[in-house]
Image: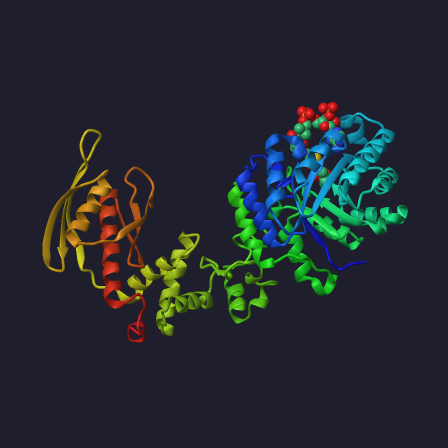
Length: 515
Ligand SMILES: CC(=O)SCCNC(=O)CCNC(=O)[C@H](O)C(C)(C)COP(=O)(O)OP(=O)(O)OC[C@H]1O[C@@H](n2cnc3c(N)ncnc32)[C@H](O)[C@@H]1OP(=O)(O)O
Ligand SMILES: CC(C)C(=O)C(=O)O
């Protein structure tokens, strides 16, 4: 048996069945090109009989996308199959995928036909498809809930009619891995001619077992796995392609199997699917989630810094993610802090690291994540105690529903008092325009946040601004019971830090670091 597992991507068909994930022609085309770059073996592009739009996108992709087999889905009715064939005909390599349900629940309640009629449908549908195309896949929908002997009969009928790939779907994500392995082994035993075809598995994630069941199928002899990028798809989704591929690659020694996937395209493909469908990837999602290669806990970061193998079983580079992400937060330790400081160009001596670490922990208790600008601000406050060029002396604001907001601001520039008057679209804008006039600052306001740090009507407001100029980025912070005063002071605080960085450079010199 081959050690190559073919990857059948159905993001454009089953993935598109995720509520709200439908894609237009341009989006499908872009994604199909990306899937070809990713190296999937087969792309199920759509269900051509379902709508003129789907026909058109399948047909356009069949004309333009080279590399993978281009596959269209069809029910057993002849009209579906003819329409599918017309749509995929221009492709270099093409496949018709015919399906019908084989479980009694589906036969009785949905299709309202007998088992005999279902077998006749298979003979007629697969037979027509095989007369048009030499690559035909047959799927026994709801196979995992079908009577095993009837399923074997359906599979034998499809092979007889000309199917070259037999797909065993766990349509409603009901199977348990051991059961699924047994089911496929049973089919191999009952239908000896199955060995000549490719067995495929198509697992849904209703119980979170889609990837485990795909592996169970592979272990029983399946050599094609169907799934979607990011695991999107009907209801709880399909097996996630990236998880299946990375499972096979990471555990290659144990499993002895390979795929044709260009793994560096995994992350770009994931981003594109998320962008196009609007279905966001949960942060803790395996392989492509924001936290998949992120570490915050001190003990983990210490290990990863010494050797990433301590906590990483694959490298982020392997799946197209730039590098791992060492997050600073309340669980971080000194090793993480020192590594980040070194990354930022700061070489602090042991006492200053200790001083900064204590301040960092106090901040991290209040904040989810500590960013570089937070560290710059801590260094400025705790270690450098930077000289303040500007200090607010006086502030008067006129604002309201019927007046143009104006501000009068007086500032100490070193020892010299300077005053200006200005306006803006709101009171904060008026204050900031006036401060910029006095200080001559060209800094851009990148972010402005305001929060209450005490309760009640007399709450202290804390304002944080993020300012940028010529590649330098700083934070400014202040609090006051008057939020406009807090806003003015935060802005001036940021400008003082920017002024310091402009004259001293963004990096601490060794001399300064030992201050
Ligand atoms: C497990 C899967 O993911 S299967 C794929 C599911 N995907 C989709 O359904 C998306 C595209 N579907 C559609 O756009 C529409 O359902 C269409 C155009 C295909 C059909 O629309 P309609 O003709 O209005 O039928 P409707 O959707 O109401 O019902 C489906 C019909 O197909 C029949 N059917 C379902 N599966 C099959 C099959 N494999 N072979 C033959 N007929 C089937 C059903 O019994 C039902 O027939 P009925 O109308 O005689 O009762
Ligand atoms: C059409 C088949 C393969 C399907 O999507 C399913 O059974 O889930």
